[in-house]
Image 1 (cartoon, rainbow, N blue to C red):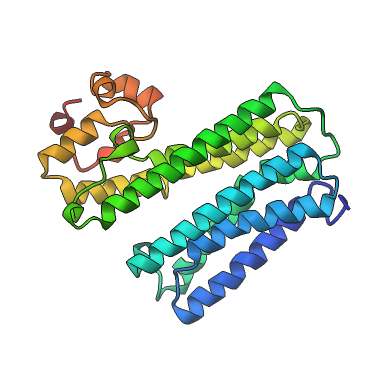
Image 2 (image 1 turned 135 degrees about the vertical axis):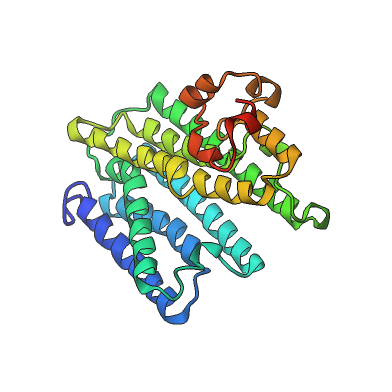
Length: 292
């Protein structure tokens, strides 16, 4: 079964991803209904993981574990984001795209690339005939995934509860894990996918190591394109004149969870080089305002 289209299922998963995303793109474009966007992304991961697992048919324990991890992650995130957007009523990311077919198409093309690329480690593991016995690196990867998804779920629920509380209306989230990171949900997301890559490494050989592009692409996406920069810019515009927010930004790590007392005392160069505190996250502030 491993010879379906190609031995590594790369062509098959690309075709399935394009078709799957195209269906939801048509729904969005024709009905002006963009609430299924994140659901389409999360469930697409599930489709690829289960499809490659079943088609290969070897049901190796490593394959099953990583596929189950993707299913758990995809269901949780897809349902959470769907319910949240149904509650909020609109997705502001599409304010400039609903009536612009070209911009809408670019978004969905990018989502298809995201799904296919980030899924690469699981795709290759499920397609591989090389399945060595479990190693320490498998356990390390599973632990990383477990920590990552726990952080992501906790952060999402804390922020949702914070936003749903009337007394917090108009405030930024600074409770729970959000005391230690400005974006703990993204930290969890990145960490769990690097965990899946680590757990895939016993299988990899030669060019298969290029599946590292999956977690690298996700990391770069959240750090520089559609994740942290957009949210930082939005928050800065809202709270640029609030002293408490400036202090929060100054003493709270952008990604990695760290005690505020420690992070606030670190030198700017260290924050930039090792903790992802990039200048683009503070374009609305001067160095003097942040005391960096």
